[in-house]
Image (cartoon, rainbow, N blue to C red; front, side, top):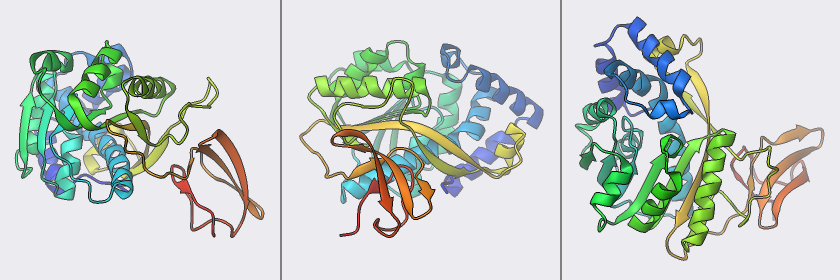
Length: 314
């Protein structure tokens, strides 16, 4: 279970205490209604930005942690340097680097003034250099055409952008190594991931994860997504009128590489494994497309979860 680093949770709690609970719940209801639509990209009030940080930042942090931790297992010893966070929101990606004690040169771009203010408040003692630009990502790339980054991130932000392909092209052009795109685990979010994958292929980039096959073999009415469990703070529970101190966040993602890097990948489990008497059913993404594998109990190594790579006992 993932949770925000203590320093960020403490600062977020102080910010939230400046606004009464009823207003925060109202602010969350407003952004929740607009979430996933073009209306979500409109300017937020201070209350809405804080409500977003309380209610959505932990889930975004969880998805980021899941994706990066699995990436680091595949690329041991990789060092993050010259990181771009396009559409940084309130700083979930920065919170990941804070939690891991990773020192990076970090460039954040966030067009919403109130979101940018919360970002600044939550990252003020991060321990690494942060450069924040309060402007639209497209304008940022047009203004700084010669800037290059080692790793670029589009985290829950592509869905808000009008010119998605245009932004992706600029991201790929400005990135020397890896591009990470994380989207909500919805059919629409997965469509954005497929667009990023298609463009990456046309730009000469290779897909690092999670895809094993070059072309997606899912049915048109299906979508590939993963799930991570996160913990809720008391403020989080209160703002959502929830009863549990945990929630499951579903997301889709893709990681691409500018160079010819291609890790060795086993079949990726893309659905919850189905346990039956004497065997387990796995739906996997393989080099030969989407396959269903039925394996007898005891023939697989360890306990397998949705999103894992499937390895059989030798």
